[in-house]
Length: 118
Image 1 (tube, one colour):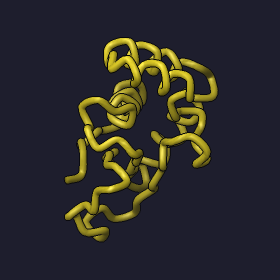
Image 2 (cartoon, one colour):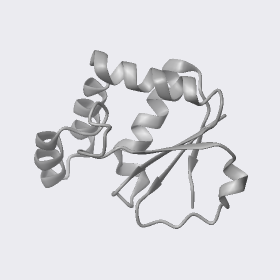
Image 3 (tube, helix red, strand yellow):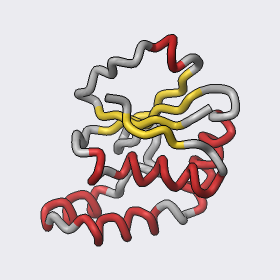
Image 4 (cartoon, helix red, strand yellow):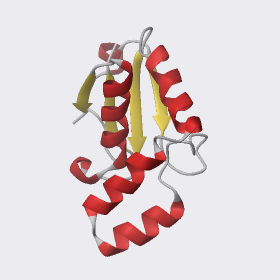
C-alpha cells in the first residue's frame, strides 16, 4: 500500500473508504513522532532564513539517526497492510518535510509514495 501526504488545514476530497486501512501520523513535534519531526532549532533557524536547500540538507541528515530510521522502517512495514498518511501544518508541499520524509521512506524501504492528497 502507498504513502500519502497532506496538511492539517486540508480536507482531502478522497473519501476514507478509498484509502482503505489507513495509518495517520502527524509528523510534528509533540505528536508522538519526534523521531522524524524537524528539530525546533532547525525549523526556527532555516525557515526564518527562507533557505529551503539548507533546511532540506539538515532535515535529511536528521533522518539518518537510528531512531528516525527505526520509525521509518515501522511505517514501511505498516504500508504492507494499509495506507500511510503523513500530516503536518505546512500548506506548501514543495517546501515541506512531510514530502521529504515520504520520499525517504519510499526510497529506503521500497514503498510507493503516491503524493499529496488534494
